[in-house]
Image (cartoon, rainbow, N blue to C red; front, side):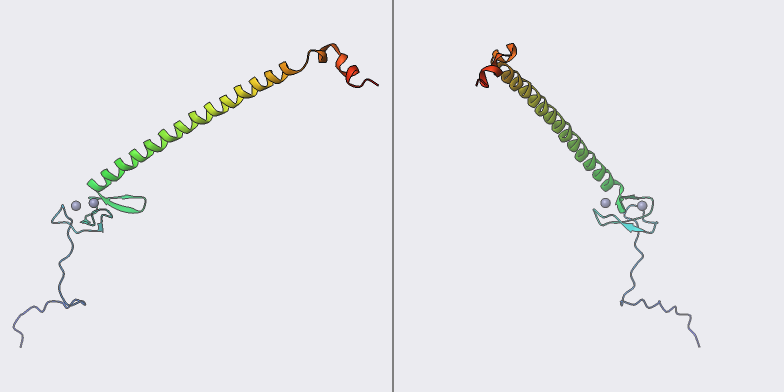
Length: 122
Ligand SMILES: [Zn+2]
Ligand SMILES: [Zn+2]
């Protein structure tokens, strides 16, 4: 004979664990964990970014940090470009200056055509 008692299902592991609920929505089932705060969240609360799940606040922090990183990288790149341009300009100016010095150092004799006859005098 039965007494109508409901036997709770036996779950491997020993104890009955309540279904995980979203940290912010009591009535919703948690579908994933935020990789930052490790909290369980429902689908609506989670944002996927680069194959990782974030909750709203953590994602905002992550995006903000990423934007700061990007800005810093951009700044550095701009500086490097300016430095390279300044460097190449300096090289150019130095090169032109040295060329001028070299040309000025050539004795005037070269131009009247006597230097060769004097150098190769028999
Ligand atoms: Zn989080
Ligand atoms: Zn939620």
